Image (cartoon, rainbow, N blue to C red; front, side, top):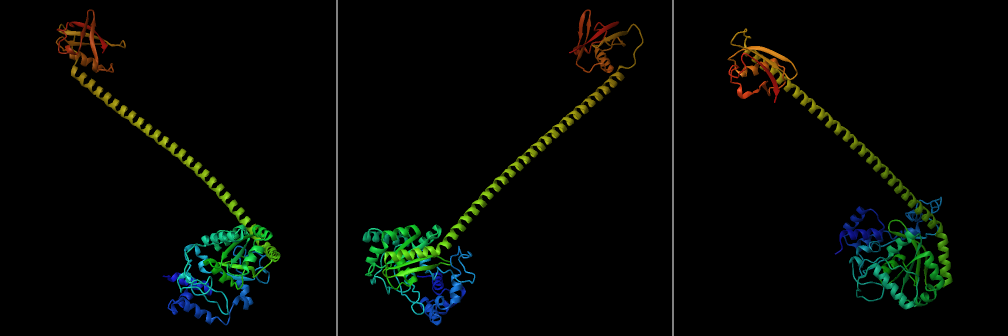
Length: 464
């Protein structure tokens, strides 16, 4: 079942109308009956018949769109706007040829028709409209469906079998061959083969397979051939409106799925006539092809230059980004190290302040302790039988002396030494040398008299 898009596309290809909305309205008005819509449209335009040939101004505008890649070339257009002399006809390719790679081709060839007085014939059966074919082999049965490339390979194989040698026909569909000619900056030589025509065998033997013709074709053209019995060959014969066989044509690509027909040969032709024709076409089109090749090379050079410039720019940008990244990383490292140093300094300051504060607190505590112990000593007693004279020698050589009651505890001697503030530690012992006696903290509860220090004693400080 053919969908709306296929009908719309085929109607546009046949009528040449580019306005999709207008084509949709025409098809809707005819109930999407493609045959009826085309018949109505061609009948309404029969008075104009073939605008390309009957109206010079239309022909001029039509041909001005030729060769999309070369249309702005001053060598290709005359100052008065006339089309190039080498292109004498513009042909719109059927949708099935353009879209052949999408699987739209079918071997069931439908009804055909001619636009106003025997113009372009189109096959609609490939879209499923009608059955049978009004031309071809005469068989009403359907053949096995082949792709355009498979048809081309089958044609080459059969041609080789029948004639032994041939021009280097490309084993691909017409659109691929046309694209190949575009990329190679060559013209496309088209040969439509009619196996049943009586002039075909002598033409192939004596002209098409002539050594000089083959050499000239292979050097200057991309050659494509097809049998009119094949789907694509039949459609192209209708597009060319081929009326006699053998049929040869020289074409080149144009805009909007069209081709420019530069020359065609219908009927028997001698090798000399064929070479002369091809030589003339090559000479006439050489300016266009050379200009196109130069412009393509300039485009490739410009593209390569832009790519090199883009690559250099990207490399410079990446280098700048790398340097900026390194600068940022270095800056982050410096800032991180500065922050760590600042944090360490603050910690050291805090530790120092804490130590100073703790030291001050300890010093204040010692001062309070000395003051408290000094107050606890009371007043120094006067000399008497029950008073003991005590002399204390410090490690720094300093001497301090005081009188105590004989019943005073050794603990009081320690309190006395602490109250003087000469020592920085409280871990010390009181000793006598002769005889050496240690009056440690374990003897703090003994009285001076009981400890044998009365009536006088000389004590030394020994740091533990």
